[in-house]
Length: 230
Picture 1 (cartoon, rainbow, N blue to C red):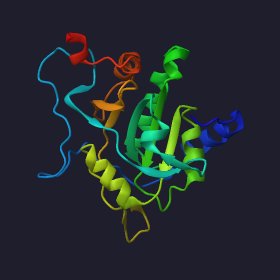
Picture 2: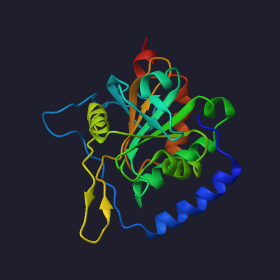
Picture 3: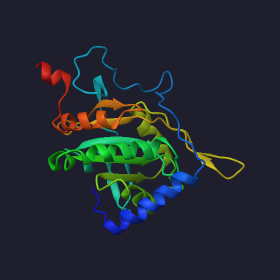
Picture 4: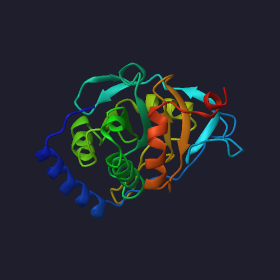
C-alpha cells in the first residue's frame, strides 16, 4: 500500500469532483476477449459458490506485468502483490463514469471491513491511458479512495497483453477532433486470492457495494468452492 497524507486526500477529493463534472471522455462496457483469443476461466453454472461475484471454474494466474507505480517506482504485479488479496481493474482517471464509480464502490466496501481484512486487500488500478495518467496524476486521483489503492502506468502494449490474458479488452485511446480522448476498455474487476495468487472471482459493472462488502472477507481467507468441497 502507498501511504497518503490527509492533505493529499483533501486535495485529491476536490480534483476528483472537478474532473468527474467536466470531463467528456467515456469508458467502455463489460467486454470479453475477442473470439478466438484468450478466454481464461468459465463462470459457474450452479449455486455452489459462496460469492456474490462470478466465481470461475478454472482460475488463472496473475498477469506477468512490470510497470511504474504511482510513487514513480518499478512495480512487479506478481512479485509485489504476492500473498495479498488483489482486486485488479483496467481504466483511466479521466473516465466520467465506470472508473470512478467502481473505485468509489470498492472504497466504501473496504471501509465496512475490519482492519484485518483491509490490511490484506490491495486494489490495483492499471491505466489504459498512460500518456495522460502519469504516476503523479494517478497518485493524486487514487488518494481520494484510500490507502488500499495502487496505480500503475507504462507501456500500453504490455497493458493490453496483460488485460487480454485475463479476458479483458483494452483499445488504444482515441483522440477526437474536439480534443477529447476516449479509452474503451472492459470494466470487470478481477479478484485474486492471497493463498495461491489465482484469479478466482470476476465482478462486472453494476456490482453493488453490498456485494463487494460480502465477498471481501471470503477473498482474504482464500475461500473457493473447490476448497470447500474437499
